[in-house]
Image 1 (cartoon, rainbow, N blue to C red):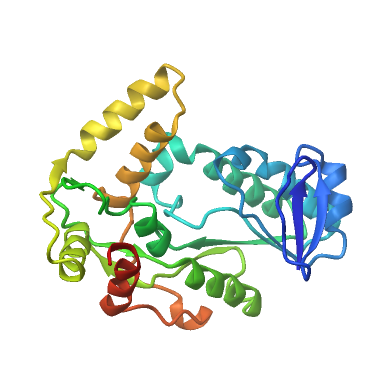
Image 2 (image 1 turned 90 degrees about the horizontal axis):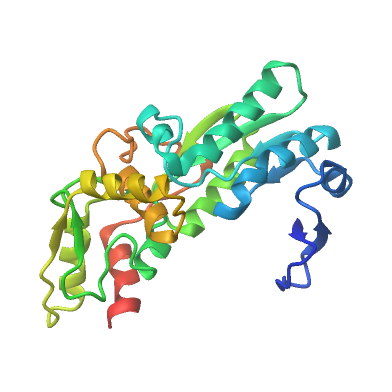
Length: 269
């Protein structure tokens, strides 16, 4: 395994991991670092999303066989999801690599769609703000969503690389469990019965309206971005519930509500 790290980064990695410092704005720098690599897994966050097209071009120049862009979340192949401004760079990256492949570039791609992260989403109070006495519940809280732990996403990535032909130039869908916000709250109450939560219902339409207004004024702050993510995750018609997954192919066993309770116990007890 090789990690490409920004030249200015001070991140520390295990001794077993090879680290190459690169200029992510330079095709030449990235190409030199990627020579000899069969696959590139892009795990960049929001700030790195605009530069993924450069990484795609460098991967092609270096002879990389498979590119996994930083999807790992909502399905930007869904037209409603793709229309949300927060996903603009992800949609642009899809278009860029698909055009390169159509033009004859010797590279393939896979989009890993896993919905919101289950463990991270609970730890960060993103799926349910369990620290608040009045946690926000979106549009009634009954929308069923597909959600996946970080470990299972890792298994899915390995599964993609182990099944090269079956995952070539397509989206793959994985999920650990389908669950609603209201059910998450019920499980939290089961884990911590002495705590009294009084959920506050919030309108996703109002959240999107607010994020649109803020973005129009140049506000790209976290609350604005999160507003769009809440719409994509909990809104109707955004494909947040996976009807058919690739768990079996990719070696993702899935989770049960007991597993969700175990996550909540670490946080609440």
